[in-house]
Amino acid sequence: MPRRLTALLALLSLAACTGGGDGTPDRADEERPGTIVVASGRDVTGSNGVRQRLIDTWNRAQQEAGSEYRARLVELPGSADEQRSQLLGALQSGSARYDVVNLDVTWVPEFAEAGLVRELPDGLVDADVIDPVAETARWDGKVYAVPFNSDVGLLYYRTDLLQKAGVEKPYVPEDFTWEHVRGHITTLGKKLDAADYVNGWTTQLAPYEGRTVNAMEAFATAVPGLRLVDEDGRYAGDVEELRRGVAEFARRVDRAYVSPDANEQDETGSTSEFTAGRTAFLRAWPSTYPTLYRVFEDRLGVAPLPGRAVLGGQNLAVTTTSERARKATELIRFLTGRQSERCLLEAGFAATRASAYGRSPRCPAEISAAPAPSPTGEADEVPRGDRGRPGLTDEMLRKALERAVHRPRTPLYGAFTQTLITQLGPLVESGSADEDELARRLDEALRRALPG
Image (tube, rainbow, N blue to C red; front, side, top):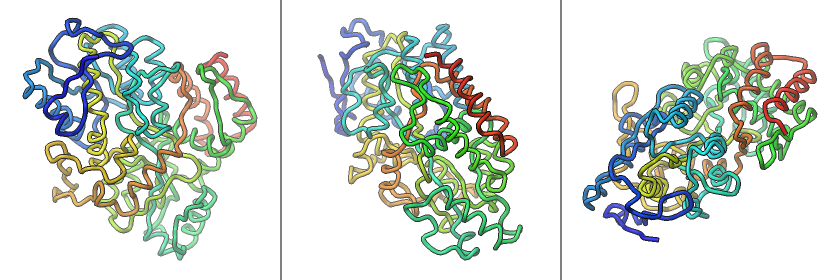
Protein backbone atom coordinates (compact mmCIF):
# COMPACT_ATOMS: atom_id res chain seq x y z
CA MET A 1 0.00 0.00 0.00
CA PRO A 2 1.59 3.32 -1.00
CA ARG A 3 2.44 5.78 1.78
CA ARG A 4 3.60 9.40 1.77
CA LEU A 5 4.79 11.76 4.45
CA THR A 6 3.86 15.41 4.13
CA ALA A 7 6.15 18.03 5.64
CA LEU A 8 3.92 18.88 8.59
CA LEU A 9 2.98 15.30 9.35
CA ALA A 10 6.68 14.58 9.66
CA LEU A 11 7.01 17.57 11.98
CA LEU A 12 4.25 16.11 14.16
CA SER A 13 5.64 12.57 13.85
CA LEU A 14 2.45 11.41 12.18
CA ALA A 15 2.63 8.99 9.29
CA ALA A 16 -0.13 9.71 6.82
CA CYS A 17 -1.45 6.64 5.09
CA THR A 18 -2.60 7.73 1.67
CA GLY A 19 -4.22 4.58 0.47
CA GLY A 20 -5.63 1.18 1.15
CA GLY A 21 -7.91 -0.31 3.74
CA ASP A 22 -11.34 -1.77 3.25
CA GLY A 23 -13.89 0.63 1.84
CA THR A 24 -11.47 3.13 0.26
CA PRO A 25 -10.16 3.24 -3.31
CA ASP A 26 -6.77 1.60 -3.84
CA ARG A 27 -5.65 3.52 -6.93
CA ALA A 28 -4.65 7.16 -7.05
CA ASP A 29 -6.37 7.67 -10.43
CA GLU A 30 -9.73 6.92 -8.77
CA GLU A 31 -9.35 10.08 -6.73
CA ARG A 32 -10.61 13.49 -7.81
CA PRO A 33 -8.23 16.20 -6.50
CA GLY A 34 -9.92 19.17 -4.91
CA THR A 35 -11.50 20.20 -1.63
CA ILE A 36 -12.30 17.65 1.07
CA VAL A 37 -15.43 18.95 2.80
CA VAL A 38 -15.69 18.11 6.50
CA ALA A 39 -19.18 18.49 8.01
CA SER A 40 -19.29 18.92 11.78
CA GLY A 41 -21.24 20.40 14.63
CA ARG A 42 -20.13 23.56 16.40
CA ASP A 43 -16.60 23.68 17.80
CA VAL A 44 -16.97 24.41 21.52
CA THR A 45 -13.50 26.01 21.55
CA GLY A 46 -14.95 28.97 19.63
CA SER A 47 -14.59 30.58 16.23
CA ASN A 48 -11.32 29.63 14.57
CA GLY A 49 -11.15 26.92 17.24
CA VAL A 50 -8.80 23.99 17.46
CA ARG A 51 -10.61 21.90 14.83
CA GLN A 52 -10.23 24.67 12.24
CA ARG A 53 -6.60 25.20 13.21
CA LEU A 54 -5.83 21.50 12.76
CA ILE A 55 -7.38 21.63 9.30
CA ASP A 56 -5.46 24.81 8.47
CA THR A 57 -2.24 23.05 9.47
CA TRP A 58 -3.01 20.07 7.24
CA ASN A 59 -3.78 22.45 4.38
CA ARG A 60 -0.43 24.20 4.77
CA ALA A 61 1.32 20.84 4.61
CA GLN A 62 -0.56 19.98 1.40
CA GLN A 63 0.42 23.30 -0.16
CA GLU A 64 4.08 22.85 0.76
CA ALA A 65 4.02 19.36 -0.73
CA GLY A 66 2.51 20.61 -4.00
CA SER A 67 -0.70 18.66 -3.42
CA GLU A 68 -3.93 19.65 -5.19
CA TYR A 69 -5.98 18.69 -2.12
CA ARG A 70 -7.32 21.03 0.54
CA ALA A 71 -9.82 20.52 3.38
CA ARG A 72 -12.68 22.81 4.37
CA LEU A 73 -14.67 22.68 7.60
CA VAL A 74 -18.42 23.25 7.42
CA GLU A 75 -20.16 23.72 10.76
CA LEU A 76 -23.79 22.60 10.87
CA PRO A 77 -26.27 24.71 12.86
CA GLY A 78 -28.69 23.49 15.49
CA SER A 79 -28.65 20.86 18.22
CA ALA A 80 -27.09 17.42 17.86
CA ASP A 81 -30.51 15.97 17.02
CA GLU A 82 -30.97 18.56 14.26
CA GLN A 83 -27.47 17.95 12.90
CA ARG A 84 -28.15 14.22 12.67
CA SER A 85 -31.28 14.92 10.61
CA GLN A 86 -29.36 17.32 8.37
CA LEU A 87 -26.59 14.82 7.71
CA LEU A 88 -28.96 11.93 7.07
CA GLY A 89 -31.00 14.00 4.66
CA ALA A 90 -27.96 15.37 2.84
CA LEU A 91 -26.22 12.01 2.41
CA GLN A 92 -29.34 10.08 1.45
CA SER A 93 -30.47 12.68 -1.09
CA GLY A 94 -27.01 13.62 -2.37
CA SER A 95 -27.87 17.29 -1.83
CA ALA A 96 -24.53 18.02 -0.15
CA ARG A 97 -21.09 16.76 -1.19
CA TYR A 98 -19.53 15.92 2.15
CA ASP A 99 -16.37 13.81 2.16
CA VAL A 100 -15.92 13.53 5.93
CA VAL A 101 -18.68 13.69 8.54
CA ASN A 102 -18.18 14.19 12.27
CA LEU A 103 -20.69 11.82 13.85
CA ASP A 104 -21.93 11.66 17.40
CA VAL A 105 -20.75 8.34 18.83
CA THR A 106 -24.34 7.05 18.92
CA TRP A 107 -24.85 7.60 15.18
CA VAL A 108 -22.10 5.31 13.87
CA PRO A 109 -24.20 2.09 13.70
CA GLU A 110 -27.04 3.92 11.93
CA PHE A 111 -24.84 5.56 9.29
CA ALA A 112 -22.85 2.34 8.75
CA GLU A 113 -25.93 0.14 8.44
CA ALA A 114 -27.49 2.61 5.99
CA GLY A 115 -24.37 2.46 3.80
CA LEU A 116 -23.71 6.18 4.16
CA VAL A 117 -20.12 5.85 5.44
CA ARG A 118 -17.23 3.63 4.34
CA GLU A 119 -15.41 0.88 6.14
CA LEU A 120 -11.98 2.16 7.20
CA PRO A 121 -8.64 0.46 7.91
CA ASP A 122 -8.52 -1.21 11.35
CA GLY A 123 -5.18 0.43 12.09
CA LEU A 124 -6.79 3.86 12.39
CA VAL A 125 -8.12 2.77 15.80
CA ASP A 126 -5.05 1.41 17.57
CA ALA A 127 -4.31 0.36 21.16
CA ASP A 128 -3.63 3.95 22.23
CA VAL A 129 -7.32 4.83 21.88
CA ILE A 130 -9.07 4.50 25.26
CA ASP A 131 -11.06 1.25 25.27
CA PRO A 132 -14.67 2.47 25.70
CA VAL A 133 -13.94 5.22 23.16
CA ALA A 134 -12.50 2.74 20.65
CA GLU A 135 -15.68 0.64 20.82
CA THR A 136 -17.68 3.53 19.38
CA ALA A 137 -15.72 3.32 16.11
CA ARG A 138 -16.93 -0.15 15.18
CA TRP A 139 -20.09 -1.74 13.96
CA ASP A 140 -20.55 -5.39 13.02
CA GLY A 141 -16.86 -5.99 13.76
CA LYS A 142 -15.64 -3.35 11.30
CA VAL A 143 -14.24 0.18 11.72
CA TYR A 144 -16.51 2.81 10.20
CA ALA A 145 -15.32 5.91 12.06
CA VAL A 146 -12.34 7.15 14.05
CA PRO A 147 -12.69 8.78 17.50
CA PHE A 148 -11.96 12.50 17.17
CA ASN A 149 -12.87 14.04 20.53
CA SER A 150 -14.51 12.34 23.48
CA ASP A 151 -16.81 13.44 26.29
CA VAL A 152 -17.98 12.23 29.69
CA GLY A 153 -20.30 13.62 32.34
CA LEU A 154 -18.73 15.41 35.33
CA LEU A 155 -20.10 16.86 38.57
CA TYR A 156 -19.37 20.55 39.14
CA TYR A 157 -20.06 22.05 42.57
CA ARG A 158 -19.71 25.24 44.61
CA THR A 159 -17.10 24.80 47.30
CA ASP A 160 -17.96 28.15 48.93
CA LEU A 161 -21.61 27.21 49.44
CA LEU A 162 -20.69 23.86 50.96
CA GLN A 163 -18.15 25.51 53.25
CA LYS A 164 -20.67 28.14 54.37
CA ALA A 165 -23.18 25.38 55.19
CA GLY A 166 -20.61 23.67 57.42
CA VAL A 167 -19.98 20.64 55.19
CA GLU A 168 -16.63 19.06 56.07
CA LYS A 169 -13.83 18.51 53.56
CA PRO A 170 -13.42 16.68 51.30
CA TYR A 171 -16.75 17.90 50.01
CA VAL A 172 -16.86 15.20 47.33
CA PRO A 173 -14.75 12.19 48.41
CA GLU A 174 -13.89 9.29 46.09
CA ASP A 175 -16.84 7.17 47.27
CA PHE A 176 -19.35 9.97 46.68
CA THR A 177 -22.81 8.76 45.64
CA TRP A 178 -26.06 10.38 44.58
CA GLU A 179 -27.33 9.73 48.08
CA HIS A 180 -24.48 11.92 49.31
CA VAL A 181 -25.47 14.61 46.80
CA ARG A 182 -29.00 14.59 48.18
CA GLY A 183 -27.62 14.76 51.72
CA HIS A 184 -25.55 17.83 50.86
CA ILE A 185 -28.57 19.47 49.24
CA THR A 186 -30.65 18.87 52.36
CA THR A 187 -27.92 20.43 54.50
CA LEU A 188 -27.65 23.47 52.21
CA GLY A 189 -31.41 24.00 52.39
CA LYS A 190 -31.31 24.04 56.18
CA LYS A 191 -28.21 26.19 56.66
CA LEU A 192 -28.33 28.83 53.88
CA ASP A 193 -30.86 31.53 53.05
CA ALA A 194 -32.28 32.38 49.63
CA ALA A 195 -29.80 35.20 49.10
CA ASP A 196 -27.05 32.59 48.71
CA TYR A 197 -28.78 29.39 47.70
CA VAL A 198 -31.93 28.33 45.84
CA ASN A 199 -31.51 25.02 43.96
CA GLY A 200 -29.68 21.81 44.83
CA TRP A 201 -28.58 20.71 41.39
CA THR A 202 -29.40 21.20 37.75
CA THR A 203 -28.83 19.30 34.53
CA GLN A 204 -30.16 18.85 31.00
CA LEU A 205 -33.69 17.42 31.08
CA ALA A 206 -35.32 19.20 28.12
CA PRO A 207 -36.89 16.80 25.57
CA TYR A 208 -33.72 16.21 23.54
CA GLU A 209 -30.63 13.98 23.82
CA GLY A 210 -29.66 15.53 27.17
CA ARG A 211 -32.65 13.82 28.79
CA THR A 212 -31.57 10.48 27.34
CA VAL A 213 -28.02 10.93 28.65
CA ASN A 214 -29.23 11.73 32.17
CA ALA A 215 -31.65 8.80 32.12
CA MET A 216 -29.04 6.33 30.91
CA GLU A 217 -26.64 7.47 33.62
CA ALA A 218 -29.32 6.72 36.20
CA PHE A 219 -30.23 3.39 34.61
CA ALA A 220 -26.59 2.25 34.35
CA THR A 221 -26.00 3.21 37.99
CA ALA A 222 -29.04 1.27 39.18
CA VAL A 223 -28.36 -1.82 37.03
CA PRO A 224 -24.62 -2.67 36.83
CA GLY A 225 -23.75 -4.13 33.43
CA LEU A 226 -27.03 -2.95 31.92
CA ARG A 227 -27.44 -3.81 28.22
CA LEU A 228 -30.68 -2.68 26.68
CA VAL A 229 -29.68 -3.96 23.23
CA ASP A 230 -27.75 -6.99 21.99
CA GLU A 231 -24.77 -7.00 19.62
CA ASP A 232 -27.13 -6.60 16.66
CA GLY A 233 -28.84 -3.58 18.17
CA ARG A 234 -32.07 -5.39 19.06
CA TYR A 235 -33.91 -4.74 22.30
CA ALA A 236 -32.67 -6.97 25.12
CA GLY A 237 -34.02 -5.31 28.28
CA ASP A 238 -36.78 -6.34 30.65
CA VAL A 239 -39.33 -4.67 32.91
CA GLU A 240 -37.42 -5.31 36.16
CA GLU A 241 -34.25 -3.64 34.86
CA LEU A 242 -36.29 -0.71 33.63
CA ARG A 243 -38.12 -0.45 36.96
CA ARG A 244 -34.84 -0.15 38.84
CA GLY A 245 -33.60 2.42 36.33
CA VAL A 246 -36.80 4.45 36.50
CA ALA A 247 -36.64 4.43 40.32
CA GLU A 248 -33.10 5.84 40.31
CA PHE A 249 -33.99 8.43 37.67
CA ALA A 250 -37.04 9.45 39.73
CA ARG A 251 -34.80 10.10 42.73
CA ARG A 252 -32.60 12.37 40.63
CA VAL A 253 -35.49 14.44 39.22
CA ASP A 254 -37.31 14.72 42.55
CA ARG A 255 -38.33 18.38 42.88
CA ALA A 256 -36.91 18.44 46.40
CA TYR A 257 -33.43 18.24 44.86
CA VAL A 258 -33.37 19.23 41.18
CA SER A 259 -34.01 22.71 39.82
CA PRO A 260 -37.63 23.21 38.70
CA ASP A 261 -36.24 24.68 35.46
CA ALA A 262 -34.13 21.62 34.58
CA ASN A 263 -36.93 20.05 32.55
CA GLU A 264 -36.56 22.91 30.06
CA GLN A 265 -32.78 23.15 30.06
CA ASP A 266 -30.11 22.05 27.61
CA GLU A 267 -26.35 22.49 28.13
CA THR A 268 -26.54 26.25 27.70
CA GLY A 269 -29.50 26.69 30.00
CA SER A 270 -28.15 24.53 32.82
CA THR A 271 -24.75 26.24 32.65
CA SER A 272 -26.39 29.66 32.76
CA GLU A 273 -28.39 28.70 35.84
CA PHE A 274 -25.29 27.43 37.62
CA THR A 275 -23.24 30.52 36.79
CA ALA A 276 -26.06 32.70 38.16
CA GLY A 277 -24.65 31.63 41.51
CA ARG A 278 -27.41 30.09 43.64
CA THR A 279 -27.31 26.45 42.50
CA ALA A 280 -24.90 24.09 44.26
CA PHE A 281 -24.33 21.21 41.79
CA LEU A 282 -24.29 20.83 38.00
CA ARG A 283 -23.95 17.78 35.77
CA ALA A 284 -22.13 18.86 32.59
CA TRP A 285 -19.42 17.94 30.06
CA PRO A 286 -15.69 18.83 30.36
CA SER A 287 -16.07 21.59 27.76
CA THR A 288 -18.12 23.56 30.32
CA TYR A 289 -15.09 23.94 32.60
CA PRO A 290 -13.56 27.11 31.07
CA THR A 291 -16.85 29.01 31.37
CA LEU A 292 -17.34 27.96 34.98
CA TYR A 293 -13.73 28.63 35.96
CA ARG A 294 -13.91 32.18 34.63
CA VAL A 295 -16.88 32.83 36.91
CA PHE A 296 -15.94 30.99 40.10
CA GLU A 297 -12.16 30.28 40.01
CA ASP A 298 -11.24 28.67 43.36
CA ARG A 299 -14.90 28.46 44.38
CA LEU A 300 -15.44 25.78 41.73
CA GLY A 301 -15.09 22.08 42.47
CA VAL A 302 -15.04 19.24 39.94
CA ALA A 303 -15.46 15.51 40.49
CA PRO A 304 -16.28 12.37 38.52
CA LEU A 305 -20.04 11.96 38.22
CA PRO A 306 -21.36 9.74 41.04
CA GLY A 307 -22.38 6.30 39.83
CA ARG A 308 -21.89 5.79 36.11
CA ALA A 309 -21.35 8.51 33.52
CA VAL A 310 -22.33 8.27 29.86
CA LEU A 311 -19.68 8.45 27.16
CA GLY A 312 -20.13 11.21 24.61
CA GLY A 313 -17.99 12.53 21.79
CA GLN A 314 -17.69 12.58 18.01
CA ASN A 315 -16.07 10.28 15.45
CA LEU A 316 -14.87 11.08 11.93
CA ALA A 317 -16.11 8.96 9.01
CA VAL A 318 -15.64 9.01 5.22
CA THR A 319 -18.85 9.12 3.19
CA THR A 320 -19.53 6.47 0.57
CA THR A 321 -20.10 9.19 -2.04
CA SER A 322 -16.73 10.87 -1.49
CA GLU A 323 -14.61 11.17 -4.62
CA ARG A 324 -11.53 11.73 -2.44
CA ALA A 325 -11.86 8.81 -0.04
CA ARG A 326 -8.15 7.91 0.14
CA LYS A 327 -7.09 11.47 0.82
CA ALA A 328 -10.02 11.95 3.21
CA THR A 329 -8.77 8.91 5.14
CA GLU A 330 -5.32 10.49 5.29
CA LEU A 331 -6.87 13.67 6.67
CA ILE A 332 -8.68 11.67 9.37
CA ARG A 333 -5.44 9.94 10.30
CA PHE A 334 -3.88 13.37 10.90
CA LEU A 335 -6.85 14.84 12.77
CA THR A 336 -7.01 11.86 15.14
CA GLY A 337 -3.28 11.25 15.57
CA ARG A 338 -1.37 11.55 18.85
CA GLN A 339 -0.25 15.13 18.44
CA SER A 340 -3.66 16.29 17.25
CA GLU A 341 -5.31 14.65 20.25
CA ARG A 342 -2.91 16.50 22.53
CA CYS A 343 -3.96 19.74 20.85
CA LEU A 344 -7.63 18.89 21.34
CA LEU A 345 -7.03 18.20 25.03
CA GLU A 346 -5.17 21.46 25.57
CA ALA A 347 -7.98 23.36 23.85
CA GLY A 348 -10.64 21.96 26.18
CA PHE A 349 -11.88 18.74 24.56
CA ALA A 350 -11.51 15.30 26.13
CA ALA A 351 -8.86 13.51 24.07
CA THR A 352 -9.54 10.01 22.77
CA ARG A 353 -5.96 8.71 23.17
CA ALA A 354 -4.36 7.69 26.47
CA SER A 355 -1.01 9.13 25.35
CA ALA A 356 -2.50 12.64 25.22
CA TYR A 357 -2.92 12.59 29.01
CA GLY A 358 0.69 11.69 29.72
CA ARG A 359 3.91 13.60 29.17
CA SER A 360 3.46 13.87 25.43
CA PRO A 361 4.91 16.95 23.66
CA ARG A 362 2.89 20.12 23.93
CA CYS A 363 0.70 21.15 21.03
CA PRO A 364 2.72 23.12 18.45
CA ALA A 365 2.14 26.86 18.56
CA GLU A 366 0.78 26.93 15.00
CA ILE A 367 -2.07 24.61 16.04
CA SER A 368 -2.64 25.53 19.67
CA ALA A 369 -5.93 27.38 19.87
CA ALA A 370 -5.64 30.97 20.99
CA PRO A 371 -7.36 31.45 24.35
CA ALA A 372 -10.91 32.65 23.95
CA PRO A 373 -11.68 36.06 25.42
CA SER A 374 -13.31 36.17 28.83
CA PRO A 375 -16.80 37.64 29.20
CA THR A 376 -15.17 40.97 30.16
CA GLY A 377 -12.87 40.96 27.14
CA GLU A 378 -9.79 40.42 29.27
CA ALA A 379 -7.13 37.80 28.58
CA ASP A 380 -8.32 34.28 29.31
CA GLU A 381 -6.50 32.87 32.33
CA VAL A 382 -8.18 29.44 32.31
CA PRO A 383 -5.50 26.82 33.01
CA ARG A 384 -5.05 24.36 30.17
CA GLY A 385 -3.28 21.11 29.41
CA ASP A 386 -0.38 19.98 31.54
CA ARG A 387 -0.36 23.26 33.44
CA GLY A 388 -3.29 21.65 35.25
CA ARG A 389 -6.88 22.70 35.80
CA PRO A 390 -7.79 23.31 39.46
CA GLY A 391 -10.06 20.42 40.39
CA LEU A 392 -10.01 18.87 36.91
CA THR A 393 -6.78 17.02 36.25
CA ASP A 394 -5.88 15.10 33.13
CA GLU A 395 -5.80 11.91 35.23
CA MET A 396 -9.35 12.48 36.50
CA LEU A 397 -10.62 13.04 32.97
CA ARG A 398 -8.86 9.96 31.58
CA LYS A 399 -10.15 7.72 34.38
CA ALA A 400 -13.68 9.05 33.89
CA LEU A 401 -13.50 8.11 30.20
CA GLU A 402 -12.22 4.64 31.05
CA ARG A 403 -15.22 4.04 33.34
CA ALA A 404 -17.84 5.60 31.08
CA VAL A 405 -20.78 3.59 29.77
CA HIS A 406 -22.31 3.55 26.30
CA ARG A 407 -25.79 4.48 25.30
CA PRO A 408 -27.41 1.60 23.40
CA ARG A 409 -25.49 0.89 20.18
CA THR A 410 -28.10 0.26 17.52
CA PRO A 411 -28.86 1.42 13.96
CA LEU A 412 -32.25 2.40 15.37
CA TYR A 413 -30.79 4.72 17.98
CA GLY A 414 -32.99 7.59 16.80
CA ALA A 415 -36.07 5.51 17.59
CA PHE A 416 -34.62 4.48 20.95
CA THR A 417 -33.83 7.98 22.16
CA GLN A 418 -37.15 9.44 21.00
CA THR A 419 -38.99 6.63 22.79
CA LEU A 420 -37.08 7.18 26.01
CA ILE A 421 -37.50 10.97 25.88
CA THR A 422 -41.24 10.65 25.32
CA GLN A 423 -41.95 7.93 27.88
CA LEU A 424 -39.99 9.69 30.62
CA GLY A 425 -41.66 13.04 29.90
CA PRO A 426 -44.40 12.81 32.57
CA LEU A 427 -41.83 11.84 35.22
CA VAL A 428 -39.50 14.72 34.31
CA GLU A 429 -42.30 17.25 34.21
CA SER A 430 -43.91 16.26 37.50
CA GLY A 431 -40.94 14.90 39.46
CA SER A 432 -42.84 11.75 40.38
CA ALA A 433 -44.70 8.88 38.71
CA ASP A 434 -46.03 5.35 39.19
CA GLU A 435 -42.64 3.74 38.62
CA ASP A 436 -43.93 0.21 37.99
CA GLU A 437 -46.45 1.40 35.41
CA LEU A 438 -43.88 3.65 33.73
CA ALA A 439 -41.40 0.77 33.47
CA ARG A 440 -44.06 -1.46 31.92
CA ARG A 441 -45.03 1.18 29.34
CA LEU A 442 -41.38 1.89 28.56
CA ASP A 443 -40.69 -1.81 28.01
CA GLU A 444 -43.61 -2.10 25.60
CA ALA A 445 -42.59 1.05 23.73
CA LEU A 446 -38.97 -0.07 23.36
CA ARG A 447 -40.08 -3.47 22.05
CA ARG A 448 -42.02 -1.68 19.33
CA ALA A 449 -39.20 0.75 18.55
CA LEU A 450 -36.39 -1.88 18.57
CA PRO A 451 -37.95 -5.13 17.39
CA GLY A 452 -36.12 -8.34 18.32
